[in-house]
Image (tube, rainbow, N blue to C red; front, side):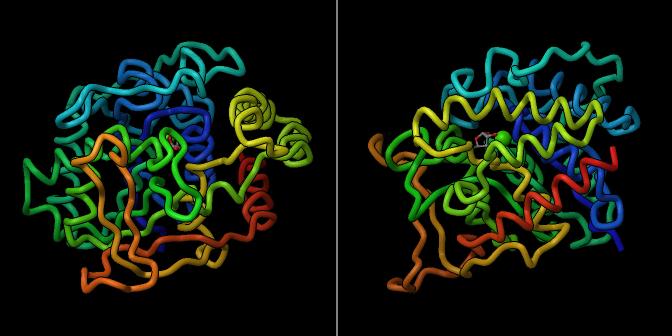
Length: 312
Ligand code: RIB
Ligand code: CA
C-alpha cells in the first residue's frame, strides 16, 4: 500500500530530484499534491519550478499549490548563490503550461488532512516549514491527523550551512520549525549530518547522464550546477544531495539510521537562530520528539535514485 504524501517544497535542484524520485516510485508513495513555499528562491519561482518538474516527469495531473511567500515572523532569506537566479539553474527548461491550482497551499493542507482518514497522510517538507506551521496555527485540529512528518532540515554534529549554527530550511523560519517540532506529530529528520554523506561525486553524476534520457540529462545538469558552490566551500568531491533523502527514506527505510531524541529550535539568539538543539545523549528530561538521522548507505541511496530516475 503506497504511503499518501504531500511534498512541501522550495525547488531548488535537490528538491526537484526529490520530486522526481517520488513520482518514479508509485509503489511506495502516492503524491496527493505539491505545496510550494518561499525558500531557496521566492514563491513565484518555487511554484513555477515545481510545475516544471512535474511536466518533466510527464505528470501534468499533479496538483501544485502556491503557499506562503514569507516566513511567519521574519523577512525571507533566499539562496540564489547556491541554486542560481531561477532556482533550477544548470539547464534551460520550457516554462510550465500545466496550471497552478487556485487555492492556497495552506488550505489544501488543511482540507486534505481533514478529508482523509486520520493518520493516513505523511507530510514531506523539503524547505522552510512556513506552510506546515501556518496550517497548524489556522487549523489545530489537523495536527493529530498527520501520520508523520519526514523533513529535510537541521544539523547537529555536522553544524550549520547558512550560519555556523543553523541549516538553511530551519534558519529561514525558526518560529515555524519551533512550532512543528513542538506539535507532537511523529517527526523523522534528515539533517545535514546525513545529507552530507550523499555527495554527487563524478561517477554518480555520470550515471545520471548515462541513463540516456531527458530526465537523466536534466538531473546531471542540475547536479553539475548545484555542486559547484558546495565543492568550493567544503572541498569535497561532490555536493550533498539533501532533499531526495526524505523520499528515499519512504521508499527504502533501511538506507538510513538515526536516534529518537529531543530536538528543539533556537529562536531567541541572533548568533544561534535556527539551530536544531538535539539532546543526543539524553541529558535533559525533554520529550523525545524526533528521529534524527545520522547514518546512510550512500551507494544504496544513489543506486535507488538512479534506478528510479531510469523509469521516467
Ligand atoms: O540546507 C539545505 C536545504 O536548503 C535543502 O532543502 C535545499 O533545497 C535548501 O532548501
Ligand atoms: Ca529544499
